Image (cartoon, rainbow, N blue to C red; front, side, top):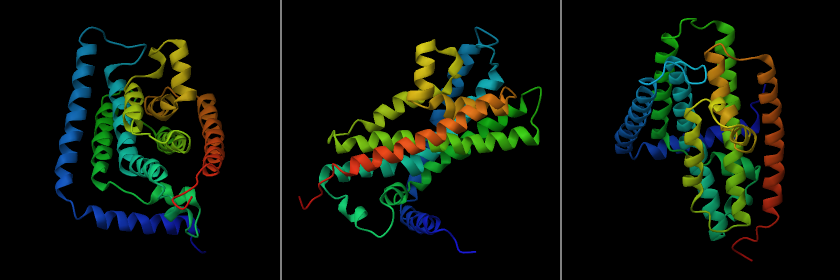
Length: 264
């Protein structure tokens, strides 16, 4: 059975990205320091909060460790694979260099989404998984196979949602040429994901779930790990992911129509 062409293209760019990143191994130690600092700050904030209360909207400290771990893990995936590609897309739209991607005999969205890799940022994935493991080990109910499989599947859905959100932001560069603030905008919004979505006011909760899908991306997988997940939530998350992917694809196509290129 032949391997689908998009997977071949993605694998080729992955290998090239790994070989390129291996030239800068000192970045590995920088990534470790950043990851440890991120985990340390997160744990310190949790310790401060739970020194005054035993629960936060029904979430115990062990539950919050799981949410923190998911937020760090998905952040590592985004920082390693999604963010560098989207920042490069915005830069090339501004400089008129996107032609090199558009003229290749592959789907343009696929090309701009997989051609860049920051390998050492995957250290955050390891540290996030470690925090999740510590949180789960302290849960009184433990974990069973169905909840574990649901957690892994919803992590994939969360990664897809964050990718779509980033691509929508980057596609905005076809209209707003100077998009230097993209990283700061995403990081500012994404940091809200280290707390359960239910603690926020109603208007903010819905905004962070449907306008900025941090709630679906982080809190829902954590609910699977802490035995709080309902089938209704899973169905809504999956349906929303399908709709957002379709809207993102349409928005990308619309943005391409506005691109004139370096030759214009």
